[in-house]
Image (spheres, rainbow, N blue to C red):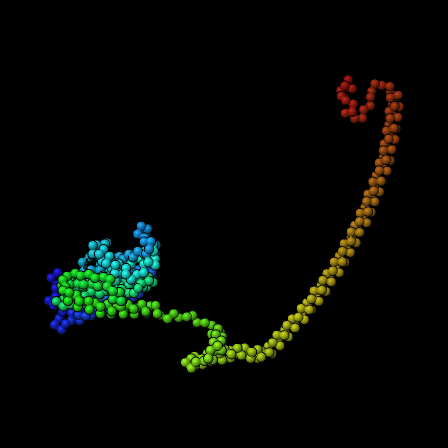
Length: 412
Ligand code: UDP
């Protein structure tokens, strides 16, 4: 690129973005931005924009990577293809693999991995916008995300770079300084000052490195303060306790007051509690007055109840009377029924008698009739005998032609 500025540091000692040699870029940190991660952090440092998600400790897969004595720490640095001026090729590169390795090693001395054998702690870094110093920015963000995930650490890790620009040692290089400067020297350290990352790109004399380390220590101290402030803000936020019921409060306060001597420091609170008690007592007293006032109404009610009872009694008497009448009617009905039955029976007997009498008469008549018939027959027979005797012919008298077999036979 040919758009190299003539000077990276002005005569006033100011850099292109207005900073002095020992100043870091403005940093903004947001914590717990990813709901699915155990811990997360979004960090802006100058024009760098970094997102970090921490997962674990969780069972390490594939299992062959598991360590029997400690958790496996995995760090993946990834640069979004849109994060740089020229499109970055997606996927791992030599550079991203190298950065991932050195950054993991920057955390290994502080993460208490021995507490979680056979597990993995994954740190995913996404560079959304790059403007030099992305690995140092990512380490600062990862430190916050690990703390947010509750991973036990001996301390926070902070990272910053120093470099050489226009022959001067400066802190925290930006993109132009990184591109056109003479040296870039990223460093990471624990909050106790132990160095966990140290790289160098360029040429520096031992004096320059010594000077640069003084700047880096200052820079890391400032970054540590920012990190601690953010974490305190998140974890020291007072938890609002749910409001207890006023009665319970009063009881508790009373019992406490009985147990301990009232302190002058709490005098206003005690006064407030007393007021609350008084109000509660007033509230309790009010309903009794109401009851006294409503006595006439109660009397009216009593009268209504009495009347209702009387009505009920009357109603019962009426019901009994109705029942009695019904019973009488039932008895009468029964009697009538019985009488009818009796009459019917009598009639039936009479009828039977009549029938029998008729039968008897009929029988008598039948007997008489039979006797008469017999008599007639006897007479007829006698007459017939007489007739036979008179005619003495071959003729046979037949009453019913069927009784005498074939007619023609006889005819013949
Ligand atoms: N950079 C780029 N394309 C790349 C890699 C890097 O444009 O493929 C830019 C990017 O802005 C990065 C800067 O070069 O921040 C310096 O990269 P370096 O490798 O020094 O890592 P860093 O300083 O970001 O940790």
